Length: 192
Ligand code: NI
Image (cartoon, rainbow, N blue to C red; front, side):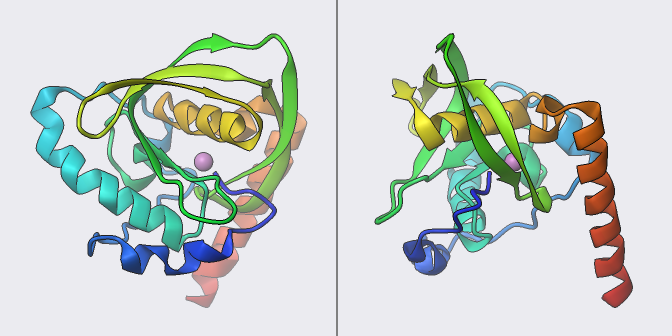
């Protein structure tokens, strides 16, 4: 996810401070993998997770963004990384994240997505969620989130299910936004 407020200053230097992990290409809509459902991570994926998670952090910070799902870098493992902190890094990697409780109360937040560059819209979601997940070492964890972190986690888990933030908009708004994106991408290609 991308927040309109722009990245926190610390993010610009972060990908260099990661352990030499590669910055991966971010796939742009309508890349088919963005519409696929990612599969659960198992113990057999441990080696891939050790490679993928640092690369996803490096890619997210470089973009810069506040959240990234594995689909966006072409992997169909249930892995997301987020960091919504304003002042200092607070990286969070979630393996097999699952929403186990949602508040009835909703909240509306402006969202953007690294796979739909420069497109923003207000999205309404449950205000608070509780998640179960595993950390990259396989330890079981739970987290309760509200505010920007809640929106970001829901946005990234949507990606693992092939859902984009524009799917939460009316068909009219979605079509306007996707047409704008297609036009911008076409112009970008023409200039390249
Ligand atoms: Ni996104």
